[in-house]
Image (cartoon, rainbow, N blue to C red):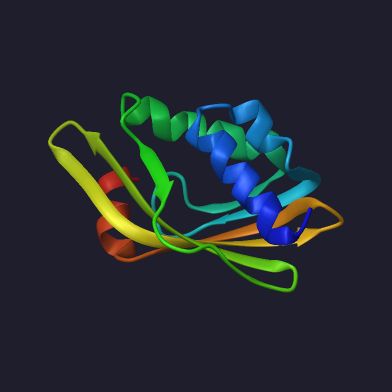
Length: 129
């Protein structure tokens, strides 16, 4: 599979709610760069830390947090950019904005992920400290 095909398969599995299948595309040493200054920001190392972060996002948003690809997935060698839209609700706060997830793929596995938000300040306020 090409790097792009791996990211598409990851996104498809995640979109179906199959976290186990999605995470099977991660390398054992995967690193996830969660941007901003909120309770979920920072470098996550390994699928366990990433899973805890996503689980925390689902918990505080009462299952409303969602993301879906929103545009063409683009590849340049081992880098793949996926435009997306993400949304959720926490009490009276809502979020619905575009972003980009950038994946690095090596030897058939996602080794690193960087996330970019259209409005990082708004996302930080949404997630809180």
